[in-house]
Length: 444
Image (cartoon, rainbow, N blue to C red; front, side):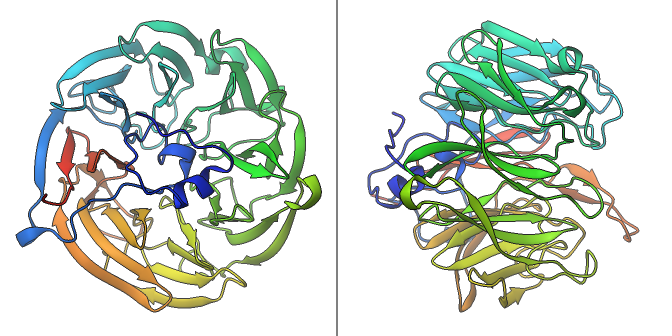
């Protein structure tokens, strides 16, 4: 049963002690990267995990989502390589891992780097599954049967200026509107809102190129505000009309390469933006007297991708907690910063994941614990604080299967670049061959 969270989503999660059952969209309910369940294991006995099931899946970066009795993901087709001309939306039985339905459609990748498969997560809302493919195929499907409710080929409809790594926006459903980053800036359609029942365009905004983030929702001045981050600005919109409520320029130094979504503090008053080349900046969100503005508090940027300042995140989303920033820097360095000014309090190099360009760790907070899935396929239970990194337990979750040749290194490495889901006291994760469900519940 999906948790119904009134008011500001983060505040609801923080004060909620009951177990949440679903992970129905990118990074969980509210897109916060927070897991609210209790009754979890405190360590992995002998480094072993309790695998409930494994299910075959094709290649892709689409992180799983979980709603009700089902688990959802996307791939490039069974046993498909980079030359395949198909994408699939998949639905699995949550208890057994059996495939319930699949929806496949023709999709030829054109001039897309890292062409293994779809990037975005499937969004589940009100019995519908909303899925966005790498080339802009946007589907609304019946979440139980996979039947097509409506479909749009955005690359054809909008003449999308395709980013070099394809479209990666996980659809956001806000009221009666589904919102995605489309990337047709020359047509004023960098971001578009569609009627969630019919797929009809409701509004379009901005003449910008786009990066790889997904829209999120915050509460400001007593109202819900949809936050979108294009390649050149971050903006707060009215989700129903698309009206721009505020915007702040984030013009990149080299290229639009914003991958991690904006990170919020517990009160919804601060928002951190971070990119690989341009470092990090903290924004204050207006909250007093109905205000919906934004103000930059600080910005930190190093002189290069190796000599960084603050956080130069690439793929790993950071999080804010109790006045501090925790994130993974450009070459896999785990860091803690002061939220007040961006000063570095500590750095852990090589402990969590081996150093390497774009080394990735997906972090999800659960109370005082932080669950991590590394690009090498390790599941780590840890605790992060201003005093440092404490590793409580580590085990192999799944094998890395995506071969990657990093710049400056002779030999390729295999990685996992798909965000996990945490629901029903389990972790759901995938590589390019299988989707796995592991039980993380404590013994009775």
